[in-house]
Length: 111
Image (cartoon, rainbow, N blue to C red; front, side):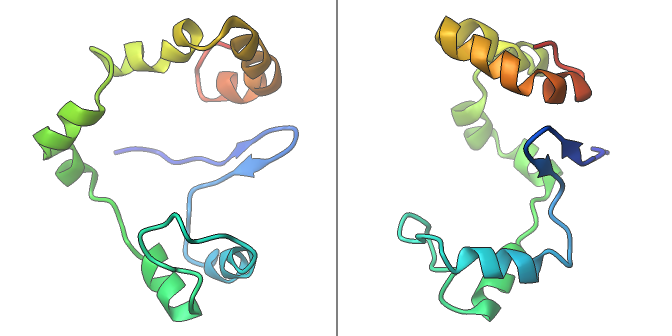
């Protein structure tokens, strides 16, 4: 079971999507460009709510070996978590660590 917890930084708070967020998200979506999305969820509030209602079944996603093969980029989850340190441009990695260090440490990652 994955525990989803809110992450609060100095500029933004990130929390798991929950019922009750729809109204604020719908309002924010009105100024969004949906042209790159597979559907125009901004066309109507009912379509937007239907789009938000899609839930990911983690077990089903993990069992999809073709998708896993396409998206797995490291030999383990632990190795994947540290890829950004090795692969980002050093200046970008330093800024990332400086600006998001407290958030990374809050979820158990070293900046």
